[in-house]
Amino acid sequence: MPEKWEEKHIVFYDGECGFCNFWVQWILERDKNDEFMFASLQSDFGQRFLKERDLNTNELSTLYLWKPHQYYLVKSKAVVRIANLLGGIYKISSVANLFPRIITDSIYDKISKNRMKLASQKCFLPDQHQKKKFIEI
Image 1: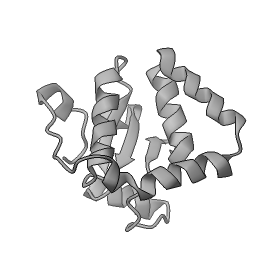
Image 2: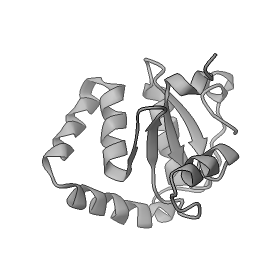
Image 3: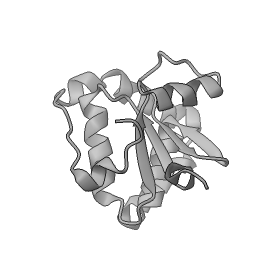
Image 4: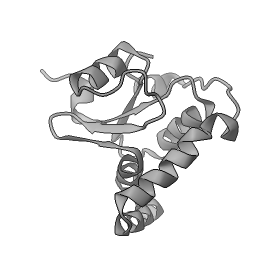
């Protein structure tokens, strides 16, 4: 029997970043179709994901979106796919696909580089329902 996360989209994020935690909470509040689960890049699960793909296990400024047994996306491509999966007005983010990835990823990198300055470093505490959506909290 597959794990419950194997049928979801897994969002890997920097668990120690207030900006990243803000966006995780933002996704949680809009995930009406229960598409997503979350794991910090620092967790054993997150580190295993990175190692299995020969990705830098110390690089925590990159957002990954993984659909097990299908694909994983990074940076701006991950952000756009998340928005599309949320649906509704957020699908407008698809317009970013009209631009070369080098441009959209450079914007992502600029934001990522300054992410610690963009939000407070307060801790996000998920409620009971939200806790079920995290892998290795």
